[in-house]
Image (cartoon, rainbow, N blue to C red; front, side):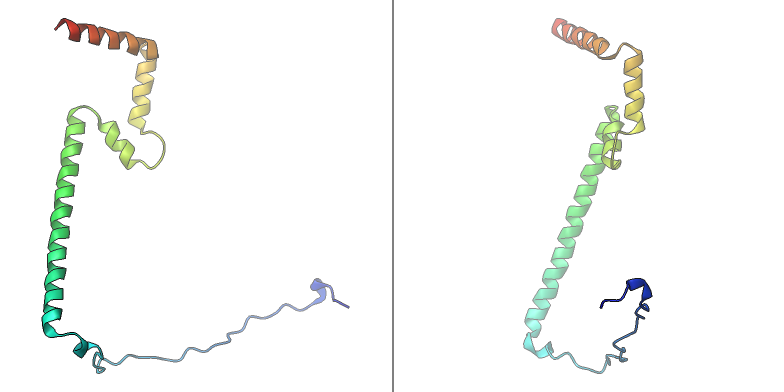
Length: 125
């Protein structure tokens, strides 16, 4: 006969394993130290230094190009492009404000008229 779970006493949690204290002494010599020659260790360190320098150079170049691209976008009046990259979801408030302005001034039809006017003036130049 299986007893009703409500009639049974709950199982108490216990710790099954005790932690043994452990300390790693600094007096232990690296067992792999003699497996690699000093010349190889020196070359490996030179390669790591070169890699760090190259990574820094590339990082600096990327940051410079990013700043330059942002400046160009801002000079073209496209800060919304930057905001949309920085915002994780949805459109930035500035884009919604611009949409509202366009809708107030005639919406899509007005944009089409302005686009045609722009093309005509460009052809006449």
